[in-house]
Image 1: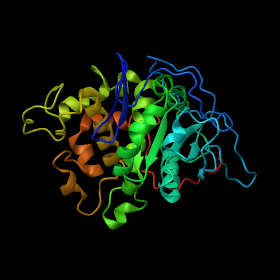
Image 2: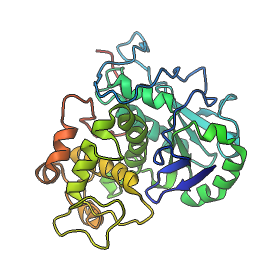
Image 3: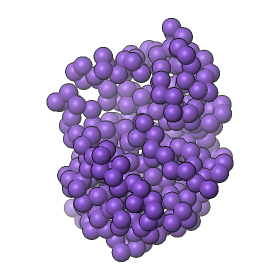
Image 4: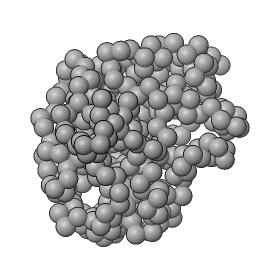
Length: 333
């Protein structure tokens, strides 16, 4: 019996039995993705923490020094072999490294394509035409990791019931889904004092269905892992649920009681990585997020969250070193 839930953070989760609740990270075979553009899901590694920074070998050269192995990142009509029932809400899609963004008719194409470029940049951060970590990519493919975009929160509320009535449980059970709204997607938003939510929601998908699965002892969100141990330090102790009050020394104080421990770990990874990359460092942002997260600049994060900073900068893992800007321009090297 499955329960569908939309977490306050925006994480669209499918809770199936004892399966993982965040990011729908269930094992998967095929959910009806577009076979013409999606890479074949290779066997997902489990429990192996040996890192890989090699690409997937995709040859997308154009002969002009640039390449498009991630796909052309342009909006296309919903594929005829899209997951069963998705046409109840979605009419268009973009394919990114064999993964898919599905979007409603009301979601602006420019917002969808911006999210696609952010997605591509998280996976190929050095923009050299190869995914930075083939193992993470394999995990995402194995879980049919997909971003679903709605024009607004209100539109999502109107369409979700119909969508999940139309989509068979066997499809939903085998997908990792993350939602994003066009209304919260702001290309170059920092210049106008707006946070671009694509930086958060795409990262939730890649981290929970990718890094957490590829390297569970480092980035796992349940039990004792390098990430959760660092989070316990940041929260001033190990709290399975939101405490009545956080210790004074805590700098991460998430207070949404609907967010369980794993959900808090997903949020923590987002705060940590985006702060490390400078994504929270713009006018008025630090004050805006202080109720939840304090070390908002790269220098504050490095000085405050020593354990997580060490993990994010560990060369063993090919984590992003540059904040995505929504302009993926890969060139063969």
